[in-house]
Length: 338
Image (tube, rainbow, N blue to C red; front, side, top):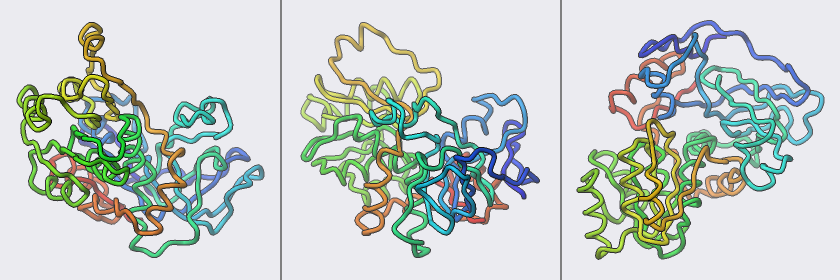
C-alpha cells in the first residue's frame, strides 16, 4: 500500500507503507472514501513542528468498514463511517463529560492519507451514517472528522447564542466553518476577518455579515467600531499565533467568550491582562466525537454543506501537490480521493 509520508520540511512523498491490519480486538479497518490535508498538517510540513523520522500523515477520514476486531459491537463491515482524529473509548469520565479528545485511552489517528486505515477503539470513535451516502455528500461528511467539528466546537466553546454578535479570527478552513457553525447556531451578526477575496466570498456564503480586512491593533479597532465600542459577544480563534490570540481577547466584550481551536505555536498569555479583560477562554483539541451524530444528521438532511470548503480535489497519489497548494495559499483545503 502507498500513502503520504513526511520526510522533512516541504518533503512530502507518496510511498510504500505497511498495510494496516487488526492488531487489537477493538480495532476496525476502513477503506478510505475520502481524506484531506489539514491546516495543522502544514506546521510539520513547514518545519515549524519538528519530526524525528519519516512520518505517515493524515487524520481526517471517512470510509467503508472492511473488517472489525472481535470486541467491536457498534460498527460492522459495509457501513460508511466517520471518526474523530483522536480515537476514544467514549466510556471514560472525560468522554462522558464530552471531551473525547482527552479520553484516558486516547490515540491520535495519524495515517489517514492512504487507501486503508486502522482505527483503534472503533466502538467509541466511529459513527455510522444512515447508509452509504451519495457521492456528493462525501466531502461534507469528511469535514465532520475534524475541520467542521472543530469549527463547531469553537462556536460552542465561545458561547455563541441565537442573535449574538460573533467575530471569527482566521480565514482558513476551520475559521470558515466556524462562520457556518455560528450561522447554524443562530448568531445574528458574524464578522469574518479575512484579507483574501475567495475566502471572503465563501465566508459570506456561509453566513458572514461583515468582513474585516485589518489585523492586529487595527483589526481590534475595526471590530470595536462595528460593535459601537463594545466588542463581540463571542470570538472564534482559529489560527494559533500570538497575534491571533491577542486579537481575539481584545475583540471580546467583558463577559464574552473565546473559543480557541487553532493549535497554539508560541502563544503566551499575560495573566494580569487576561484577569482584567473579564473574558471566558475555552478551547483545545475539538471533541468532534461529541458532535458527530448531530452534524451527520445536519449534512444528511442537507441543512449544511461544509464540503464547499474544499476548493481543490486531487487523486491521493498527488497528495504532495495538495500540500504545496495549501502552503502557498493557492487552495483553502485539499480533498484527496484514493
